[in-house]
Amino acid sequence: MTVARTLNFIDGEFREGRDWFENRNPCDNGVFAMVAEAGEAEVDAAVQAARRALKGPWGKMTVHERAAILHKVADGITRRFEEFLEAECRDTGKPKSLARHIDIPRGAANFKIFADLVKNVPTESFVLDTPDGAGAVNYALRRPKGVIGVICPWNLPLLLMTWKVGPALACGNAVVVKPSEETPTTATLLGEVMNEAGVPPGVYNVVHGFGPGSAGEFLTSHDGVDAVTFTGETRTGAAIMRAGAGRIRPVSLELGGKNPAIVFADADMDKAIEGTMRSAFANCGQVCLGTERVFVQRPLFDEFVARLKAGASGLVVGTPDNAAANMGPLVSREHQSKVLSYYQKARELGAEQVIGGGIPQMPGHLVEGAWIEPTIWTGLGDDSAIMREEIFGPCCHISPFDEEDEVVERANDTDYGLACSIWTENGSRAHRVASRIEAGLVWVNSWFLRDLRTPFGGSKRSGIGREGGVHSLEFYTELSNVCIKL
Ligand SMILES: NC(=O)C1=CN([C@@H]2O[C@H](COP(=O)(O)OP(=O)(O)OC[C@H]3O[C@@H](n4cnc5c(N)ncnc54)[C@H](O)[C@@H]3O)[C@@H](O)[C@H]2O)C=CC1
Ligand SMILES: O=C(O)/C=C/C=C(\O)C(=O)O
Image (cartoon, rainbow, N blue to C red):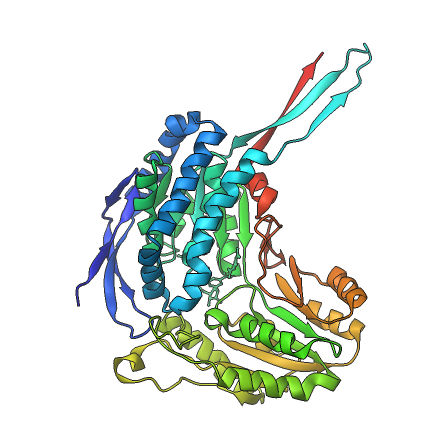
């Protein structure tokens, strides 16, 4: 097999780095590409290129000119859809059927929505009375923040990266992206699209590497970076905050979750099962919004457990090209070890394993892949590690509950506050419970139904700030108030 080379993208050009690291296919653990690791010199070159770009044609463009270019970027992704799909699925192992409907279309949509939004969202203005009677007018102007460091995870690589790069560029910033070391390819491919679309050199840069002692740390501690946006693990978010603390650098952090689903006895069972199947198992459970704690009101409990088990047993594990497959492997053998350690812990804690708990039998060379069984447990207390720590695999624990107040308290009894799904046909209950859930995102009778204009982010240890719609504009711009004395 030929081993490809994945390069850094700096100042509009593809460049090597200080070293090379392997990119492995999660389906068989085979090395299919060598990735150029950016050292301090490459990261510095990327940041300097971004700073120059702000002073060049990009910084002088009108909002409409920028928006038109970003539409071309979206069109470029759509035109090269199959290439992006192939690359994303090779890096992550996820089913093409999933990436075709979610990851790649969202990659394009993230540019379009913010290109349009930035043209249409007003800023505030106030008329002030003054003692001389003439008054004053205040209006706010948006200025780009500058160079944005974008640190990305591996679970939805193109989707989550463009979710940040789209608004950052729409607002007139330049970016230096550090994709996850597990999934470097689509960010690199996007460099070609940027050039084709006429994005000036230096506006979009990609540096590859790891976190500590590598490109991630070099970027987040670089003096030339004005703000950092990050999606990933809570501990990494803390390290990124520390790296910018001395410079009072703004951060937007979208971190982990331990998200509950609450199924009331008046829920539509078919909808609740279908939604929980997706929220627990989609993308092999590697979604920060995914459900790992399911609370089911007692009258429905046994039926719910039986039906979710039946659903999980019908999942087809397979490679991205397998049209019948709806579950791929985990992203890496390393992540497989982490998830398996929780499967083992659940056994030690005395959980009842309803289904799964191990590695599925795979044929031929696929035995080397990061495959994992979808897993359901019952019987553990709310204080167990399985109920408190983010596992990030295709698994959930189902607990019974009796009363509304009780389940609200139990759902909120977590360090995290990212997402929750409530399943009920009682509209009053839906509103009442939704208002009491301590999470940034509450879905009623749905999951991952995304309107990109809405606030997105988490409370508690799930993050700082909100992105999405106007909230992204808030993070990626500085507001200057202009006060004119009349
Ligand atoms: N969307 C989410 O909420 C995600 C959560 N996770 C969770 O995090 C766990 C670990 O996965 P990782 O990929 O190791 O997540 P991570 O948070 O360590 O990595 C995410 C990104 O941050 C970079 N990074 C790591 N340390 C850094 C540092 N000190 N400074 C700057 N950049 C740094 C990584 O290179 C990667 O690009 C997973 O097992 C899962 O539980 C992982 C991916 C996504
Ligand atoms: O729809 C989005 O913008 C994001 C979805 C998922 C995540 O943020 C995640 O899994 O990290």
